[in-house]
Image (cartoon, rainbow, N blue to C red; front, top):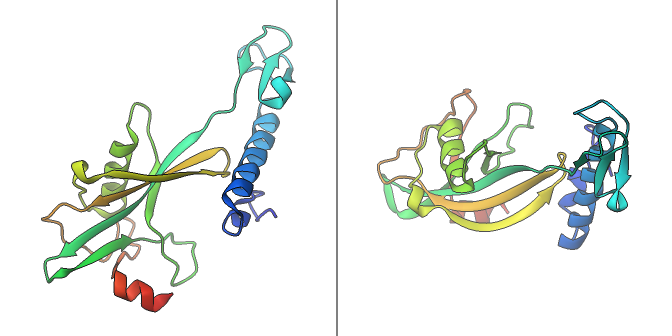
Length: 186
């Protein structure tokens, strides 16, 4: 099932891990084949090679493989100074989302950046909150066809001196929620 952007992303939430991987592969290869019909070096026609896993130029023989855009998605937790006994997580939202929809923060890695550095940078850019770099821990990864992305999940702790603001740099609301509140929502 494709969404309005032509991606199969909405189908992933209901898919098994194996099916999600197959959907991501199919979407990624379709996008790759569509966007690599001509050689970026000489302009000649490309042809599929290795069962569609790459494209090869019919003239200069250059071989091109699909690329991945790697992004980090992170659960940031902290104990707020007003409530040292409870651990809270940071959630944000996009302006185009329906009211009440929130997510953990996420963002794409930049050239030369480790995924852990990406996690720290993205949290600060999106929320103004500093993450303790030594607390960043890998949790899991998932192919994500928007298109050809790999989401790398992390858990990290906000620095001890952090105070949670209620808006990000774009003026969008940020919220903190504890485990008990999360269970009440579910």
